[in-house]
Image (cartoon, rainbow over all chains, first blue to last red; front, side):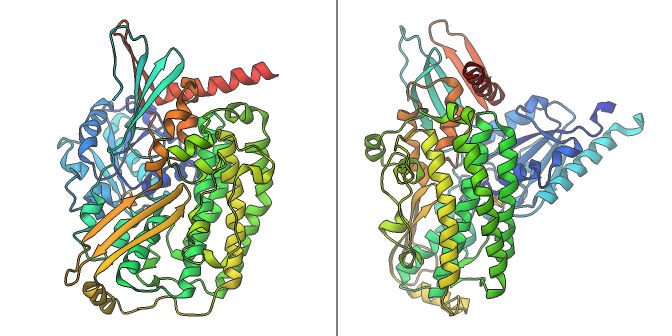
Length: 147
Length: 416
Ligand code: SF4
């Protein structure tokens, strides 16, 4: 799918917590506050998945959240990138042997989902900003030779 | 569950479990009569990860990093309770220096948690400039925590019998610098959150919890201290080094305010606790004894000791959100924990939602939900079902937030 020019520099991000420990979520908020100020790059946290280009995903996906996580993924318009923030999102991390964990997320999403991983437990705000930049480059590539 | 009858003309508003800003998945079912809330029914369990189960399948030292990942904002709190419970069960004493270092870290976490809360509260009533201001000044204590422990969140400082990192004398100037920074800024925080007339309009007499209700519902922490209940584990049952320090209950009447238990007094208590924490950290730095930081540096020996131990232990703490407890049991000859039980402060405080929401408006939901400083709290998706017609309407977090901001504007116009 080709993207329009409007994607340049204005990524809208929806944050979705599927049962994380909150640390990565706090760092995501820290990333948009004055010290790191991700908004100067046009990155904005939005309140609805229907407005988003990037899904910022944290947590190992608990049983109760699984269905809701998939619903939010479907509600996000294409083309979209899923950015998994933190180790517990990408591998279930410290929660690996729990009965209540259904993740990691990449085993639940469709095969053609575009997923980026940001590591760290918790990750740092600088790393999150770097991750969003990677997502932006990725979407640019999808835009192809449209330039 | 809230019952619905045929003649009922109230609305049902389930709120949650996905929230766009921060916090964990959680759901509250509201029952509304027009704009007024008549019932609130919390549904926890969305964030259930089976932590206790996992802890009972690992050796006691491996559980420490797991225990701090119960909640990232309270990571020190859970580490502390878990290690003290195991120490209690196995009869191991931490060194005195470790007690002081633990106290300093606990108080630093209280500063960061309360400043963070102030920002969230300001955001909920539509003052995003204050959100950015408080989060900007919060970075200073995050820097200090990183300087001491090596990480911004989830510090892994604790171990059974002591701590893993020292606070040597060379670190004291940096600690002092951070404390002075907060002291200088404190008046500004108070001017904003206690002095600003528009913030007062949104917080005074909103979400009231009377002293009687607070006692009956067994609320904990700043939530009930704001109603005048003298309850603080640091004083009632001193742990770590609190027994040696000079501190008193932070309740509004100590500062010439009434113990009303509304959002305003909860803000007041939290801000005053920041000052208290600064004083406590100073006392600790001055009194810290010269000793080892860990009573058993050889981890293999320690594990062996824990394997041979038999007994039960309890760890209590006054977390930034109130009292919390861990219980642990060790069995002789078994490496893993035999039993581990956690009771965090938000679980107690959830029950106080019911009287606080009662009779308030939809626009006040965000600030009242935030005022107990929940470790959970979701306003993303709210659906309103009109019982008389069967029609439904959805409120997103944004709409709820907008309602809240509009109320502030209306109040401002009325008061000008
Ligand atoms: S990656 Fe680690 S710090 Fe981040 S949410 Fe998961 S458990 Fe918490």
